[in-house]
Figure 1 (cartoon, rainbow, N blue to C red):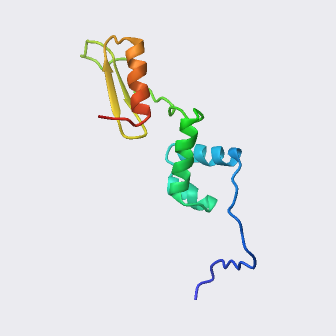
Figure 2 (figure 1 turned 135 degrees about the vertical axis):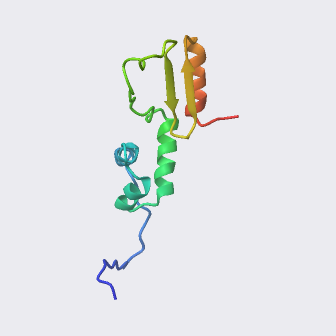
Length: 120
């Protein structure tokens, strides 16, 4: 027999209601670098799919946006002369590489489509 925690339910319990601030805090914790959604969900006592659902809801409301930017290097590697390259990796797994001059409106549209997870 294990010496784990035992919970005895003596009455009818209702579903737990999560405040918006609690949801936002858990979503933010799951988006931190190196964080595991399963671990964050386990600590909160919820299923990981619930946490993924909250992430989708907050992203749809505009409360969750892009992840922090990481700049690999400030100068082009020695021996390479040419246009600068920007590479963007989205949470959904899509990756965008932009080389040279690009129309800002076209770039914004492409980023919006990939950020939503819509792909061809």
